Length: 98
Image (cartoon, rainbow, N blue to C red; front, side, top):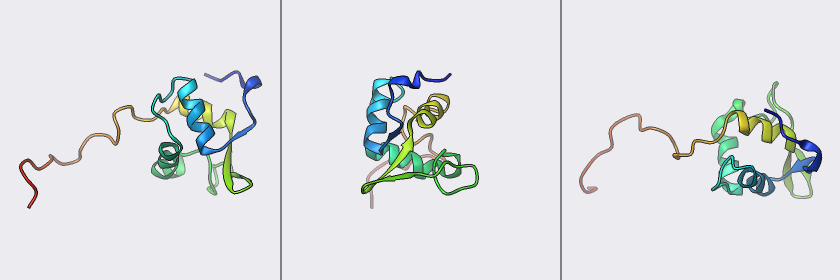
């Protein structure tokens, strides 16, 4: 699904991206830090960066910015996990820490 890109800014910073994610109902708890975490955690799957299939970030003053339409379309197709970091790979220890 694509977004009506007419009213959107062409580029957004991580803080502005978090605002859009909350406004579009993609992630109601989005913060600039959580969007940065997504970028690091998804690595080559993240649409922005220096990789062959990635769109380069644009430098605006002291901040990196991303193409808004690409970001919103990507996060609508692959939204953040609403339950946090995902399932445990091993059972958690119970009891008190040593």
